[in-house]
Amino acid sequence: MPTPDDQWKQRIADLWAAFDEHEPQAFLAKVKSMADELPAGNAIAEYELASAHDSIGHEAEAAVHYRRAFAAGLPESHRRRATIQFASTLRNLGQADESVSLLTAERDAGSDELDDAVTAFLALALTDLGRDREAAALALGALSRHLPRYNRSLANYAKALTHP
Image (cartoon, rainbow, N blue to C red; front, side):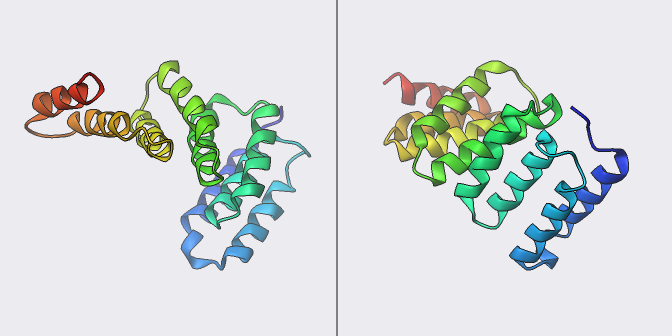
């Protein structure tokens, strides 16, 4: 799969950095224009289109583009972010079960700086399914790693929520 060059990557990063300066439809049009510079079906172009639709509240259209991005072989550099975003979109579309599945698999797949984001969005999806104790345990467990004090106590409380 051809990947965008560094200049394209910088331009899309600059566009995202200026997101709040654009009206939603104008922003989407700019992303579409940039996506059109890449070959049809390019995974990164599909990911950027998904993200743009998501950011302006077009979740159903975003889901279509996320699925296309994954099917086209989204590179690892984008895959985890796309999974988090897609799972959030699915949750917003009332598909919390699929969201939980994706995020649970993602939690088990590896570890990086996005671990707490995976956990946070998983907690939201679990809440949508009425699994509030499990959601609270996940959120508190993730939070406990960032506290200057009481982290061991909070982690223990989080464990106790799932094993009453």
